[in-house]
Amino acid sequence: MELKGTGNVKLTGSVSIGIRTILSNRHIQCALICAKKSNEIESQYSEGSKWEENAPLYQEDQAYSWGAIISSVAYLESLINEFFNDCNYNAEEIKSIGEEEIKLLNKHYEKDFKCRRKGPKHLKIFCKYLTAYSIINGKGIYKKSDLCQNFIDLIQLRNALTHYHSEFQFEMGDPYGLNQLQGRFKENIFMNNVGNSFFPFKCLGAGCAEWAVNISIDFTEFFYSEIGLKSKMAEVKKIQLGMS
Image 1 (cartoon, one colour):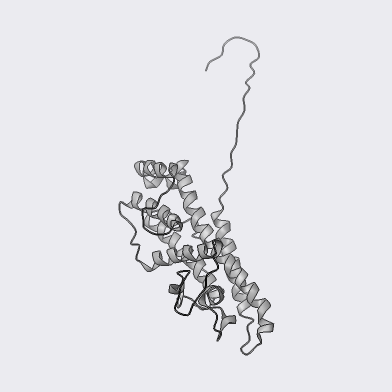
Image 2 (image 1 turned 30 degrees about the vertical axis):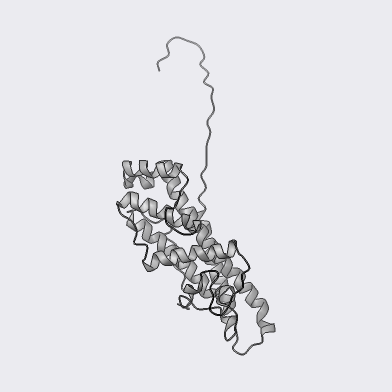
């Protein structure tokens, strides 16, 4: 705009600055810290020690394992939500996906995600990853792979904890649908040679905490690699607790 003549010109107005905070990195850092603490506690176990000595350690161990599981799933959910947010705001780091693909992703972002898969509603997180993957790659994820099954089982474990119902557990029963996790990680060392049920007593421990963290990182690195983007958590290395 060109101004001619003499005089004073005063421009008024306002500018709003918004800040979008990313929390996925903090969730996985929390999970890592909890998993490491759980491992440190179990390293204090002494063969033949009495339960009276181990009870306080066991309770603390379970608390940290619980934290690692909850935070691992929180990382998975916040990361995919942040991905769709990036698409919605047309962030620079996702533009390589393609203009048409981003438009389709935004259409799904605006809707409430409804999983067509038969089963519990808690698979909604998994469906968000499936939706993004299929739109970008033009094909679905092989859901029967070990990685996908572990992802689904991790969410189921998280939900069993956060939406807990006190059910009777019999020797041959599996009311929480979690017995398939047996053998995937080392059971809580404080529960050696006891008759308690697998969940929650033997399940929650350093081995489960490590499994939860590693599955969440493995899956998101797989997802970002498959859609051709650099993982936001590439700098986070899987923890090696010496129990795998």
